[in-house]
Image (cartoon, rainbow, N blue to C red; front, side):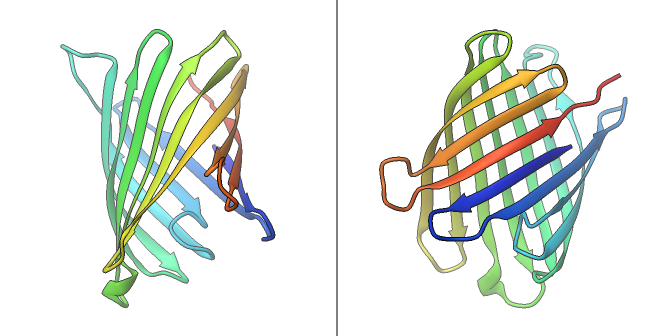
Length: 177
């Protein structure tokens, strides 16, 4: 379960909950709200694949249904590469609107983190958005996080050197058997 709080200077914040489950056979399902669009929910399904020759790499293709202010479907993947201290993850997603193709977009959240010690990590993040018939929009960022038992608390600052900074705070809980 993940709970994110997004806020920019001079705006009200947005709460973005994500609830996901992965079965012992690596099937994946996720519900999220305010992620693809404000006042919009989505339900995604997929399956994680691992590689015997590269066990640090996991790829989870998924597809989803989007409902609310934005109605449509999505296709994406979760890519995770874990090293001893370095981790890389990327979640590209393409959103198809049922109403208007001008609402279609490609979105990606990418992170590269370094595990400083057992409870602290930091790194870089990048958000990319490409709306139909518009230019790519890149938001580079820095992040730091704390791990306490089954909780992760990351904080991100995107566009840290500009006047349009925005922040994301996460409170994430993992339950594993």
